[in-house]
Length: 432
Picture 1 (cartoon, one colour):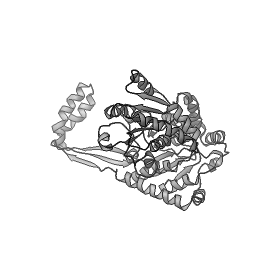
Picture 2 (picture 1 turned 90 degrees about the vertical axis):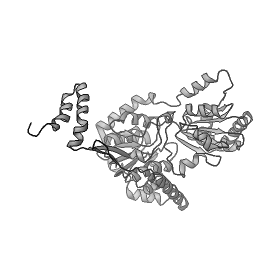
Picture 3 (picture 1 turned 180 degrees about the vertical axis):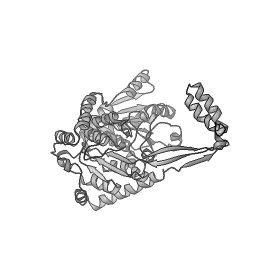
Picture 4 (picture 1 turned 180 degrees about the horizontal axis):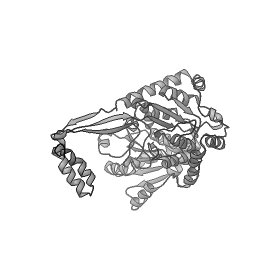
């Protein structure tokens, strides 16, 4: 774990190094993924089954790629009633928040006599990728599928790896609750390729969303253009801005809540109190051995954790915007005031009683967020990701007469005579 202080002479260089660090890249898997994608395009289901046997240790036939309704119902029946109830609370809240985002169509009539507008329509089909390696994530099913359903997407297909043939009952129960119509027991780059290009058993989709490992991220990068994607997700991250009035243990646990995701995850604390920084560092070390995923959390904290001491909250706000974190917790006396000064973060959690985990599961806003400083220009998953905008124009002869001639001049200036003529020919006297 690194300790930095803005008072140190070498802070600028050290912080710049922290910003530039690539905790996980897809460069090393580019060639492997390209081979898998090409194989799926050439050989379809046969390649998909071969990849599944190779990577997930499970022999499949094309007929068993799709998980049957009976299997889904049987798996969901294994889930404890209290867990199903919790799933429903989360789903209801996520659905409500994303329904409130639904935009309205726009129409305007201007002085030239044109009527113009913008119409929103849902995508026809969406593919959802749900990780199934280090852990199962039913929450990701809800966060990816429910906004698509709210938007009105007609077909929602989900791919989830099932290593050694093991189905996760809660993941399937979440898919059922979210209205997923198709579920396939395939994962990795091969699943992304199948969703993008289609096979005999898996029809192609128009957009692919959902997080995954480096192979999944690289596959999404390679199929982009053939289909839309939500983004190329990297390891999870949290930045906490906390003053000394907090519980050091609470902050330590919040840092470890990200660290336990993955050895490449990043957890950073910024504080204005040296004594509090030391207390949090000690609390983290005390807490790690108590976690079931202690090895993962410990590796993440050792390699990527950091505590930064600042002189004031102006410095803290500036550093936060440069980090542009996926998750940002503001555990200060007036979080709203500090939030108003910040520009870049995937999702922000205000106050001492709003841990990031609240957003992961139950609050309502989406937990699929931009990582790796991409919050500088990207946003988290929302209802808008499953909609597209179509603009329209309606002009009569009088309206065309008012604005057509300057349009024709611009077309001629660009050397596009047919463009110009298409504007002016309609204004010529009848019969000419």
